[in-house]
Amino acid sequence: MTTPVMRRPKAAEPRALAGTAIAATVGLVAAGWVVAITRMSGMDMGVATKLGSFPFFLSVWVPMMAAMMLPGLLPSAVRLAATWRRPFDVPSYIGSYLTVWALVGVVVYTLYRPHSPATAGAVAVAVGMYELTPLKRRFRHLCRARAASGWELGVCCVGSCIGLMVVMLALGAMSLTWMAAISAAVLIQKLVPPRAVIDIPLAAAMVALGLIELAR
Image 1 (cartoon, rainbow, N blue to C red):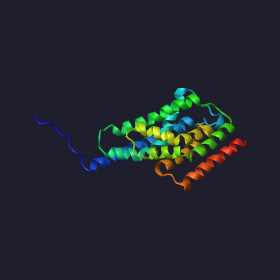
Image 2: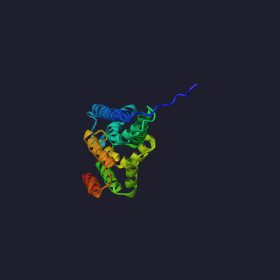
Image 3: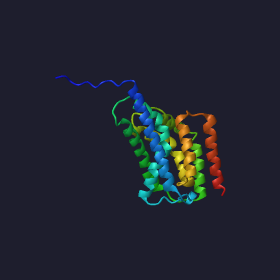
Image 4: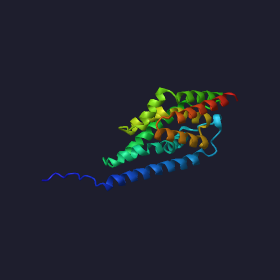
């Protein structure tokens, strides 16, 4: 009896799988924005924003993370799809990555409280300083590098992006404006290597914003 041998993929198959990974990721990002916009409508109260019930918060947080974080994951998902390993590698990779951010959401819900502008300002100043530390650069490098799993990449990206996320939570946890601004900053930092011409102005802007909030 002849043992069946798995055929090697044709050249077109990795490209097709990469295209599918792109379409699926873009679809999740779009769906995340639609859900976030719908659920967050009328919720923004700045520093006084309340998160609502835990189920409601998770119904906002997970789509928000898909909208904000998956664009930067796209190159990794495409590389994984191109290797043509198992059919569920890419969904598992993305799912485990989002699970890491969902767990971060549990911590956020536990710790978050409505606060004063002074608290938001202090957070922004601290994050602006963190953006220029060797620890931030290290996590950022790891977040941009190839990772063996979505779990690993998720942990590295939390270390890289957590400061930016904390600023969003401090200034307007349910603000679509801050969500869009932080999404852009996260994407730039995931796709572009550390450069003083970009990183220093961003850090300085955070510190300046924090000082403005402290002066209120």
